[in-house]
Image (cartoon, rainbow, N blue to C red; front, side):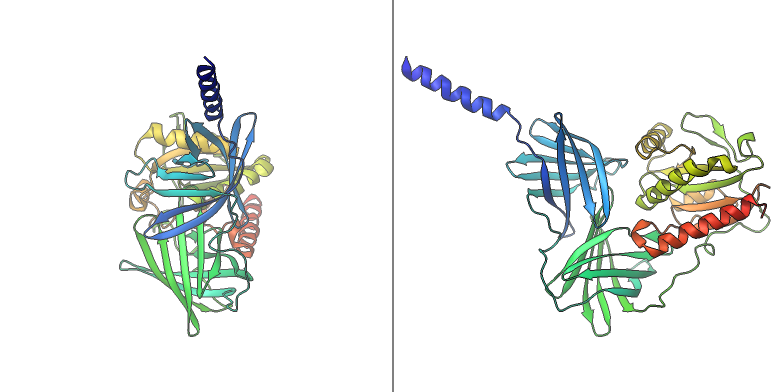
Amino acid sequence: MYRIFLFLAVASFFLSCSSKTKDLSGTWRAVVTMQDQELPFTFTLTKEKDQYSAIIRNAEEKLALDDVRLEGDTLVLVMHIFDAQIRAKVLDDKLSGVFIKNYELDATVPFEATKGDNYRFAKKEKTNLDFSGKYSVTFTNEKDTTQAIGVFTQNENEVKGTFLTPTGDYRYLQGNIVGETMKLSAFDGNHTYVFTANVKGDSIMGDFYSGKTYHQVWKGIKSESASLPHPESLTYLKEGYDRIEFSFPDVEGKKVTPQDDKYKNKVVILQLFGTWCPNCMDETRFLADWYTQNNTRGVEIIGLAYERKDDFSYASDRVKKMKEKLNVTYDFVIAGVNDKVKAGETLPMLNKVVAFPTTIFIGKDGKVKYIHTGFSGPGTGIYYEQFKESFNQKINELLAGG
């Protein structure tokens, strides 16, 4: 009888222990693996009243996730506004699983994380190498060549920076000098970036990896005069046009045109964007805040959404989620899919759609005044400040009747 009692007591103890979920709160170092490259990033899990939340960090960026949950022994992190998630088994102080893009069947990559570690590629230490500065950069693969500006800051072996291109920037990159190599990464909940570089004479040369297949080589030459084409020179109206015309459904299915009474005799901003696009989300955050402060001045904004699927219900749901998460109060329509050629067909008065986002400024007379291609977001520092100054100057000019 005593042995039976002892057995039941021990069994009850272990069952009660196993039924209690381990507290996962704390800092984690994660690694996503793609193309034989490790993409590290850190995130913090916080638990409050049995509900987890997370913050992913890339340099100064803090990406807040509020849809974090345990499904049995699997931790699920839904990637904010993006149609993607991490699913990982909880193994003591480790997580093992996958990063999944729900809209893309062949995009799943391995994910691992270790609790307590808080570094990117390497722990902080001194180095004799200095990659800091401004660079004129060329990205190349078998299909095309892209000019860019690279801007990096360095503290011992820790590096932060970004690349600006004619169509946008690579946002918040963070990494380390590891041996003779600079390594940078970014994980924004949708895109996965790894950059490497080594010193070659008076240049730095390296590789850029994105997702499971995309690869470019790049070369940078230090240059304080590095520049890009003017963002208002790339997208323009075809000859014979002076305004934008369309009729697209809003998120509830009601047709909207720029000629509607709501927009007459007002300055109107058209934002060509997609909820899948981190640069677009940077611009949306800026526009949302700006609109809240300025909507009584006679300015309206219409976001033209080009989404991953040619499915109104899917696209509408993505935009509604983004509006809620980012607290956006201006108008949106579902314009098409995120193929630039097809997007151009929806606005045939444009020479082409070069980039998401593209921002079109319309005067009170209904005519197009400026078209700004791409967006230099907060990760670009001074370039972002210059954009904001230029944006406000344009609006003030148009409100004054220019």
